[in-house]
Length: 82
Image (cartoon, rainbow, N blue to C red; front, side, top):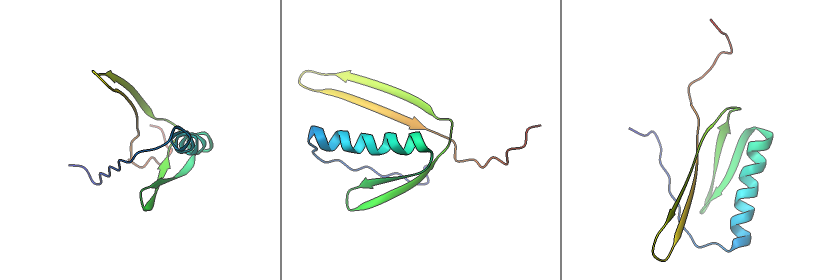
């Protein structure tokens, strides 16, 4: 079961989409917390140094879908190695 799931869909201009991706890229580049504007509110998430990535492209009759998925563990690490 998922602890939280949020989905927000809206129409964007190419420039708005670029701004959204640039903000996410900046948060990934600098680490720490990412503040993402989603609809009427903001989502703040901690992004660790290591991520899993998946890119999916689907081409249909009259549209192309591009999904970029980033995943990471929420398990706490104490930094100690056995």
